[in-house]
Image (cartoon, rainbow, N blue to C red; front, side, top):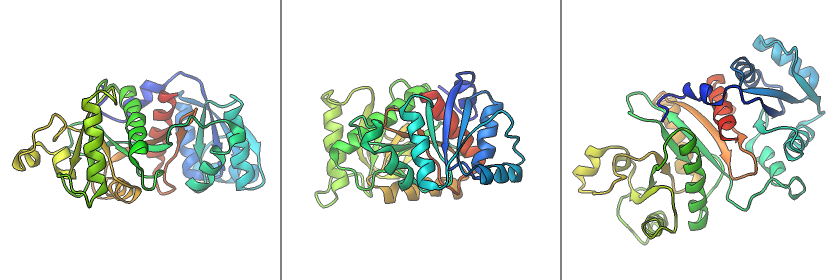
Length: 297
């Protein structure tokens, strides 16, 4: 089991994965891609306005010698061309560049590209948090707005795949809400209890799952003991499943901007994993996200 995100670089090194970057004219994205090339993680295909890509590369101090550039006039054309490369097997990974999440995902979801699997696509993020004893996995901070029961099960299965790649064979999954008791007026607590029972009956396999939990008692044994919560997941969760995108996104950004956590994120549920980070994320976060996604592929 890895303990630091930097270990993702070793995990994904030397695989020769081709990475198609949609709308690649972004200096931070290009800097991260260049680092991934230097680490022997990916072979990039930069899709976007060639002139702007070269301008942004110069700004970032990135030498594009040897890089393949596929010219596209606008955002829509660049997204289409990048996704098409993945659909045809000419790229192993897809990465969001200088465009909104909705724009790239709309293209991925087009039936003509055949990248759907039937599973819910979701964002899975891995955090390295100062003074926290292990890597922590979070879903979903960026894709699924208000997941229903079936979608939450898909989110868990996607996150478990990520956990196994970083060396956690049987991850502990905590479903969180505002409270740790079942309240019919809080659907998140009802869903959590149902999913926990389904896991007990082996309807969901490969993880130890429990809930509902409040955030404190899923990450702190002391808080769980103080509230009298007895569970193998209490205080020991490897994966946190939030009830909706509001909670997930707030927690994600709180960890980054307040707790100074490092992170890596990927989109799971399509036929290929997708590198998806916030436009505000650092080049280090984007590098770790590329490494995580390459390891998953």
